[in-house]
Every structure is written in C-alpha cells, then in structure tokens.
Amino acid sequence: MRSDPSSKPATPLSLRSINGWRGPGALAIAFAHFAVASELVTYRRLEPIALLVDMFFVFSGIVIAQVYSEKLANARAIPEYIVRRFGRIWPLQAATLALLVGYELLKLVLQAGFGRQFSTAPFSHEGYNLLSAIPTNLLLIQAIGLHDRETWNFPSWSLSVEFVTYVMFAAFCLIGPAWRRAAAVITIAISLAVLIFVAPYHMRSTFDYGLFRCFAGFFAGTLCYEAACRWLRPNWRMPTLMQLGALALVIVWMTFSSWGLLVFAAPFVFCLFVLAYASEQGLVSRFLVTKPMQFLAELSFAIYMVHALVLIFFLAGMHALARATGQPLFQMMVNPLAGRPGAPATVEVLHIANPALLWLCAILYLVTVVALAYAAYLWIEVPGRAFFGRIAKRIDRKRLEGKRLEPKLMPTNPSSAVPLMRDPLEPAP
Image (cartoon, rainbow, N blue to C red):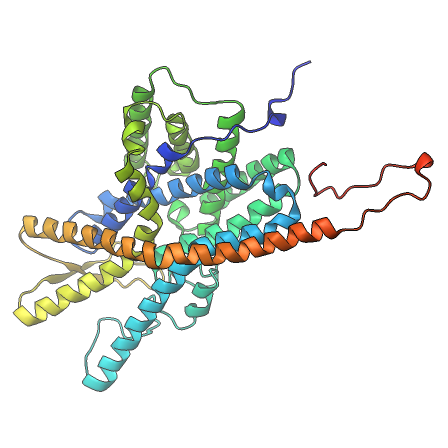
C-alpha cells in the first residue's frame, strides 16, 4: 500500500540561494521609484518592476511555511509567533513614519513662520501624508481598505497586508496539514477572482485590494514549499541552464504581461522561479550565496523601507539647489498615475539635460539608499527584532511552564482505566 506523500515529514529547504534575490529585488524597486520621479526611464517601461512585490510575497510564504508550519499546529504557539512577526516589521515602519511626520511638521513651521510655500501643503488631504492615517500606519492596518490612497511611507502598504496574512496563516495551521493546503488553494482562487473581476487596478492594487495580492502570492509560496519538500525536491541535471532559463522566463513574462491577463500568473511564475533556485546548484546559485549577495539580502527589508525617504529628501535637496542656482532642474509632466486617489493630474519630475549627470544622480541615490539601509538595519531593525524576540521568548517560557504545571488527571481505578482525551492542538506525547 502506497504511503501518502503529504504525510511525509517535510525536508527543510536551504533558502540561501533564493534569499540572494532579495537584495537585487529591493534595489530594483528603489531604482524604479527614482526613475519615475525623473526623466531617466519612462514610467511605462518600469511599470512591470512593481510585480517584484509579488515575488517577495511568494518568498515570505516559503520562509514562514518552513519555519512555522509544524509549530503553529499548537494554538499556544501563536502569541509568540505574532509577536515575532510584528517585531520583524514594526520597528522600521514606526521609525520611517516618525521621520515623515517630523518632515511634515518642519514644513508646517516653515510655512507658518517664514512664508515658505510647498507644492503639497503639510498634512494636506491632497497628498499622501494624512493625519488620520498616522494611527493606522502605527497599527499596520493602513492597507486593508481604511483609506482611499497609499499613505505616508507608501511602500509600507505591503507590510500591512503581509501582517494580516501572517495571522491568517496561523489560523490555517490549526486545522491540520491537509485542510491547510485546501484552504490555501481556495484562498488563492478567491483572491485571483477578486483581483480579476473586482479590483480596479488588478495586480497593481495596493491600498485597496493589495491584501488579495498578498494572499495569492503568500499562499502560493506555502504550497510551493510543501511541493518542493515532499514531491518536487529540486535536483536539476543542468542547474545553471535551468536557473538562467527561469530568470529569462521572469524577464519575458514581466515585459509582456503589463495589464494583460498574463499578469495574474504572478504567484505561479515566481513559484517556478523559486523552484529553479531551491537546489543551490549551478553558477548563478554560487554567486547568490556569496557574502556580498547575502549581506545585500540581509539589508533588503531596510532598503525597501528607507528608499522612499531618501527619494523625498533627495528631491527636496534638488529643489533647494534649483532655487540657489536659478537652474530649472524640474519640469511638469502628465502624471502616469493620474486618476488614482491622491494623485494629481500633473507631477513635477527631475529634469537634467545631461544624461550622464542624471545617471550620476541615480547612482548617488542608490548608494545613499544602501548606506541609510545599513544604518537602519544596525540601529533600528536588529535592536527592534531583538527586543520583540525577548518578549516572544518570555511568552513561550510561560507557555511551557504552564504546560508543565498542568495537573495530571488519573483514573480512580487503574484497572478499568479509559484513555484520557487529549487536547487536539497539543502535539502527541
């Protein structure tokens, strides 16, 4: 009689090669936002880069499934898990929010005390920095339909929806492995249906239906992890060719999927991409597991979180330079995002006639992003993770102590003992 493959214990994947793509992905998103704010590359050419966010959702699903799938079968492990996930993303969210609020307060002082005028007034409802969105950003609930636009540190919408997805994954783990997989399949199907038929911006959804993008990518990642561990353990005969082919597939798909039906294949395309690199064989994997690439991967979250701040202050500095020199460094153009809530019909973009100087600005911007990300990683992300980690350990310690102190009920007549009922959420003894 054949054994059910789904009942086999999962063999952990080595995620270093997959993890190596995090750094380039985060830098690509940072570069795209700079290019959109300048005349470096047209918005239409850079639009597919936004789909890299779905790659990060798939990566998160794989990592969380590997680390927590078995552990979260016990409901008592959920509080520790929630605290750790919250502590992983909240410190940088709070720090970047504080800086942006401080910047709006500075604008308010300069406007009221010195008559300085800004293209967007401080805390204006016409922009993204809304007073009403400060509490929701602090609570990581800003992108679940509570606002009509992206707010404050605009890339952080993905943190909001990912945290909600963490909680949903924990709930799925309580119903057992088979039902968890079925729930993941149903969630992916419903999410894609919502994105196709309901969401006005489809796979470009962020503040409104971005939660369904995260559901589709994250739970596709959890299924990809289980498939790789139990059925499709990657062991390619020509790994380098397989990896280069997977990379080419992603590039071609991103190039030709803009606003077409192919765009909804994002979760599955990135799952195939992951499977090509899960074996850690081949020349590309050897490059991705080098210390520089792993270090960049370690900084990827900080890069993602600080690049909008660097862009804002970089453009403010260029405005100051334009005023000081009298040189027209900016010009107005039609906003490619016009029509979205909070997006004006026209937008001011950095305009430097010399292409070499413009590319130099882009390089300076990216170097500044990496430098600030490193500082944020050392001074905010790592200490914040450690702080919440200590809280999580105390929660887990109390759980284990409570488990040891539970009274052991014994039948009064051992000879006629009936097996006692065991909490179905506790692991078997």
